[in-house]
Length: 258
Image (cartoon, rainbow, N blue to C red; front, side, top):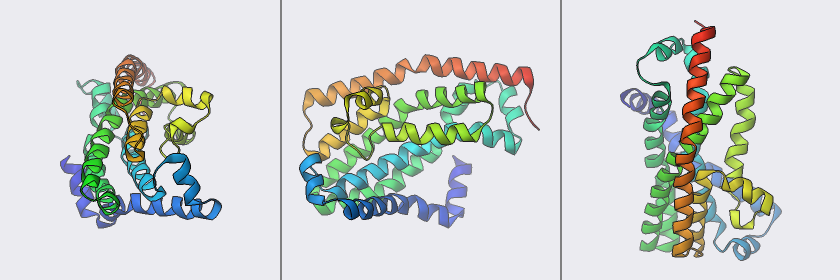
């Protein structure tokens, strides 16, 4: 944490990027959306103003992507940096190492990214926006927590069977983020895509957030979605542990680059 936060505050451009990223992404999506469609149609279909929907979606994408990137890119980064031999030979379990690695940067993304959610929600909804912003931040924490086992399992499995290949990560990573429904509500998806999305733990948390800001949330729907998200997160714990063990065994057999 000391290393990550020292680097963050030393590099002012990175700090500015953390704060500005949700705004920039939202601006891009709105410009593109207004160019090809009508905001009135968006409100009729989704039930909420596109500015509110996109700023929340950008924040969720930013916070969740931080975790995914740290987990999926870290093995390549460690090998290129020359620290992987020490990580593999450490008494700390490999899966614990990679589970703990995204925590500092994720906390920073949640805190700094929330500077986009709270102002916009308060402007549009007053004091109610403060409560909605807090709910969004809380559910983003749950989203990242339940997504970590799946991201770890997918990332380390790719490294085990495909080698340290960044091209595979570049294909898988955006697909995972798109399927979650950050910018397109799951309740509007076609059934095949909806079923695939249902296998992604954070997709259920994201749907809860979107239903809350659209005024479509019901108590039983929220509870079922959260139970599904947590249950899937726990379920993917076993594949995560197996993929970490397989990758570590492979590194011990063939060695690592130095």
